Length: 134
Image 1 (tube, one colour):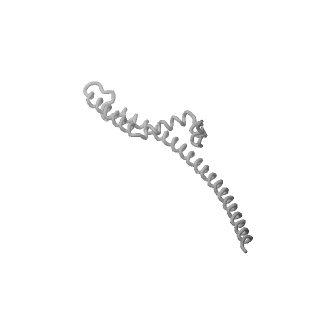
Image 2 (cartoon, helix red, strand yellow):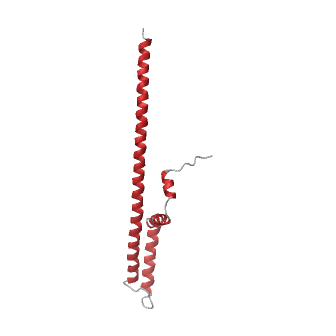
């Protein structure tokens, strides 16, 4: 049977709300090359359709005011999502730093205990040498 101890990060991930998970998924998606490529492709297609359909019935003729509106709304939404995700990341970093600090304090106590035990053992060895000396 494998050891199934959960790390702090696993426990934290399990405690996330649906909104926090959604923000992380969206942040990871929007911060990727496939998103950038798809976004550029979308804009090129939009511009091409509305430029070539200019003579007929383009739904957003040049200067693409509807596209500009959509881009502005997307920028506002992306900013909020990135801030939510950054805020959560800061909280995670602070909690992990506190955990590291607590671990370091515990390790320091244990090291000091081992040093004291070692010091006592050296004293005992020195006493034994004195007793064994002729």
